[in-house]
Length: 279
Image 1 (spheres, one colour):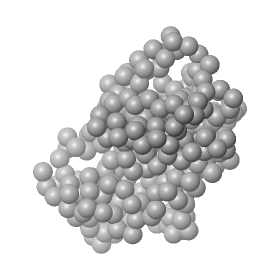
Image 2 (image 1 turned 90 degrees about the vertical axis):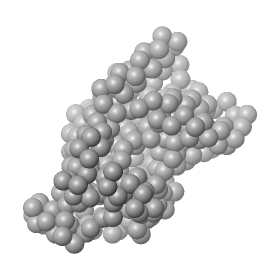
Image 3 (image 1 turned 180 degrees about the vertical axis):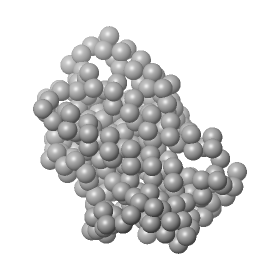
Image 4 (image 1 turned 30 degrees about the vertical axis):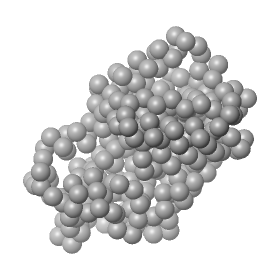
């Protein structure tokens, strides 16, 4: 019998930082999501090369310890196809022996900058497949293997709190993640399973480079991912359902209650332009 910790989007950014901090906390005996059983960390992302490098880094941290091991699974987590691949991995693992998923971090996702009319529809649909369908499917696939004390962390966004011009589909997908996470938390409360939505604003990762198609290499005013993840794990361990690290993010989320949806979308469309390169 072993404990599984599963992180999607684990080859870089917040996902890799989640992996680093979870490994260290388990080695130090400070993690809520480990006990006397052996823990196994699954890293899930599309890039074989990046996952290989991430696993090497974590293996060096673990050294000779028997408390935790790392497995890298390279596949596209988006859509129904990603969910089926994940289900097959869990089924194969079950055939090899009993396990419990102690923590699922649904971190895989991406965004696109620019007005909806100027962004490729295929890319927007791919985003929805990953940010919405894939995340939902992973939650469903993991449920039979969760137990009292297990936790799901879904990475939403500060963009979840208000429709955003020049960021329309991304904000909508993250609004879904926030709404879904809150509802799932309510449904699983009686089973002792926690669900929380991490809602970061700008964080210093590769997000902006991808979202802008290379027009913006680094996000503006990005926060430290180490602090964001540490705060998230601390609050998730205490059962917090919506997690915002900085005071600025908390204020923005609070004030969004008083801004009309159309007004917010119109103002961000006119005055919050985001650089992007056309395909």
